[in-house]
Amino acid sequence: MEIIPAIDIIDGKCVRLTQGDYGQKIIYNENPLEVAKEFEGAGLKRLHLVDLDGAKAGKVQNWKVLETIAGQSSMVIDFGGGIKTAKEVDQVLSSGAAFATVGSIAVKQEAVFLEWLSMYGADKFFLGADVKEEKIAVGGWLETTEKDIYSFLENYTAKGIKQVFCTDVSKDGKLEGPSIQLYKNIISQFPALYFVASGGVATLDDLVQLREIGCKGAIVGKAIYEGRISLLELEKFNRNV
Image 1 (cartoon, rainbow, N blue to C red):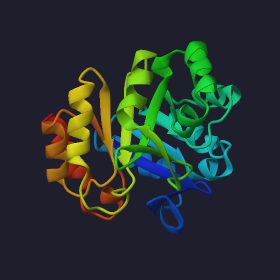
Image 2: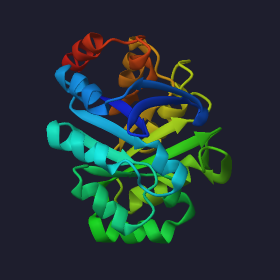
Image 3: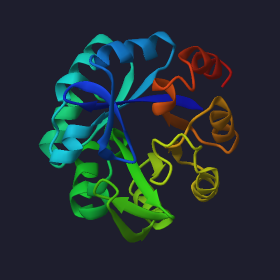
C-alpha cells in the first residue's frame, strides 16, 4: 500500500482544516516545498496537493506551488482544488502534476467531466468521492446528494477511471480512525480499482488495517503534522509493504 502524504495550501502556505472548515485552519509551514522535500527524503514517492483557495474560489489559485514542488522534487503529484475548465486541467498537467484531482465536477457536471476524459484520457485523473453515510457529498461537504458511492463509482469505472480516493466527511481531520467498513464494502465491489483511503488516519495501526483490507493507497495529513505518525515510521512502513 502506498502512503500518500497531503499538503493543503492556503495563501501559498501548508495548512490543515478540520472537516473542511476554513475557520478551523492551522498553518503548519510557510514553505510547502520544504514539507514536500521532507516527505521525499523519507522515501515517499507520491504527493496529494490540494489548493484550498482554489476549492473555495472555484478556480485554481496555487498552481505556482505545484510548479515549484514538481520542478524541485521527483514526487508523483496529484493536484486539485477549483479545477473547473479544460484550460485549468491543461494548466495543472503542464505545471507538473501527474494527475488532476477532481470531485464535485464529476458529480454536478458529468457531461463536462466526460469531455475531459475523452480529451486527456482517464489515466490523467484522480477522482475524489466525499461520502456522508454512503451518499456523495459536494460543495465543501455542505451538500449531500442522493447519489450513493457505489453507483457513482460504477459509472466512472465503466468510463475508464482507475484511481479513486474516498473521504468519509464525518472522519476527516478528526484523527478518529478511518472508515474501515465503508472501504471494505467499496473494495469488495470494485476489486480492480486503485482505491485510496482518505480521512481519519491517526496511527500506524490504522495504516496496517487499511493495507489488510486491500487499500492500494492511503492519504495521510494531520497525523503527520501533529506528530501522531513520524516520517521515520512511514519510511519503515513503506519498506515493509
